[in-house]
Image (cartoon, rainbow, N blue to C red; front, side):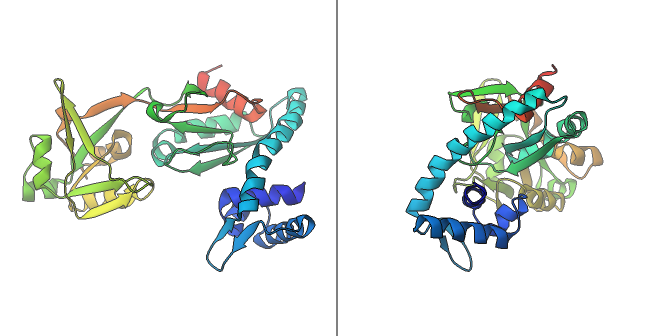
Length: 294
């Protein structure tokens, strides 16, 4: 069983070192466990190179069957949690970078103080993932990206905005855009989704919707790399379009100033989502009750 758990951890993490960082043992211990499993089964489960580790076809098939099976074993063991005074165990959440930065900080500390025997793992990933295959109990995403068979619970602010901003020095040197189409004549900090698509900037005012694909000297993948884009905007390199909560501290300090404010678009806040077709682990149930205020 331990060797199976080690193998699945390596596949889900994408490597021995990555799995070791998640608390599954050392990289050498994980490697030894997978080798034992391969010897016992008589088939290679992983392709190993000096730079990467990936599942063979046999390994991928095994991982696909193991994930739900081991989840059921965990669910059976979790029944014992109902006999404890306080829930215990590991809660794994898969969340986008913006949620990790602007939504979770005010939630995580009081939650873990209330439930000190729960260990929380936060995996930051902007693309939509198969929670079960990724070994996660729940995810946080926005409503337009939720699968229909998932249970969704509101978490964090119920309304958010994408805002546009620039450094005072940039606006003094290049002028202030008065309409979204003016951005086509400005340098803009662009974001790129993990799949490779470039994020289009969308604005709305008095029923008019404008979508802009502006030029820019800097393009970053969505996620923590946006810190680089924010820094560049503060340094006067160009205009940035990002979540309001991410930029609000820089508005308050004066490092950035709002641009095109009447055109800022509001949208629904994020949701915690999880499968309704499986036993709800006690740590996840405690987290759901916590964010609901129960």
